[in-house]
Image (cartoon, rainbow, N blue to C red):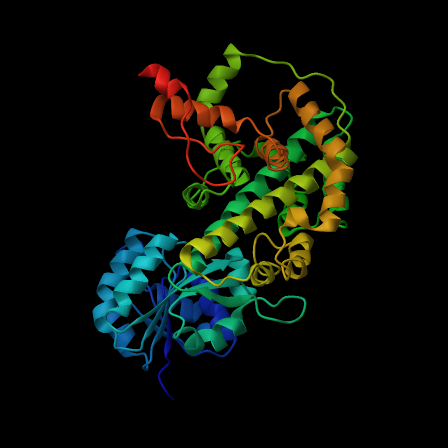
Length: 471
């Protein structure tokens, strides 16, 4: 029996599921997990005994022996927390490798870290791929969405196995692709997570708005989400929202026993910052992130709520209007996310096809949905989502419902961070003449930054008469 040339380092939830997926597809494996006395002991060996598909895998706690067990060219997947843990293992792993080996970093790393690692390993002849993995524990086991970037010459060495374990779209094509050099794969994963943040926040806002109307009891909310699943609103996140609302404890909805504090692991902040650095408007990702920050300030909220007590009015919420507002907000969310990728591809020189991204995200990942399926064909043209005729018609038909829903939220004193953000983005992006001329005049007044004139066709910067007056 030949030694394997595939190995997995890090047997947490995702590493375990991905290892099992590879083994189920017939890929011989070596497994490595660190040893921490009394905390992590014989993890790889226990996995080989626990999961039948891993019974032939080679378990290790010694990194040198793990590397020695692999045939060259080695293909090693790292499934570790981003940052210190990944840096530490690479520091010890790299000297043990030989030229031509491939390291695939499958954690949620920042794309700039991936860029740096790819260059450092290339200098010593090691291929490095940064691979965004979406789908959670279940997806990693049954078929995740894989967003790969880094060494283009390395991808053909690993594509067969990666595409085999990936989810398949409706055409049977793998939800796995090489997206570009350096940090392209991890950048796309960051945007995926940003879209995910906003999708989750929108569902939370819908839940609160619908529940604020005394006419709608909890069973009505369950029914509403269930009905939406059979429409164009369908998504994985909507599906799990409907499912979790069916759980009870002592006759009460289980959701009521969960403290209203939503945490985060930092990728939402990365997505928000990446959009700002590119100069693209990703306000929905940002609004969802800040909503989580507000939720985490539980003690402060309780204190301030006593200073400013407010009783909700008996406001009727139209579920039909709410659905239209939700659908249009989701459309804006996807528009912002994909335009962020479009801009990044230009800035970083990545040849990213947006239709390919939509295909990768159509199955196997957290943001898969009927809408995402439709985007595969829409992005085969170079138009944005706000230029697509059926979406133009949908927006025009739903504007009044969107506005009415937000009016109801104001009257009820219900914060709708992401839905409001979507609305204001739409107003701003569809406004031919804005008030930004005043801002630019202010900048010129205090900082002599200059401005472009409306009666000039070039980009020459001019200064206002106030600069002369100040002198």
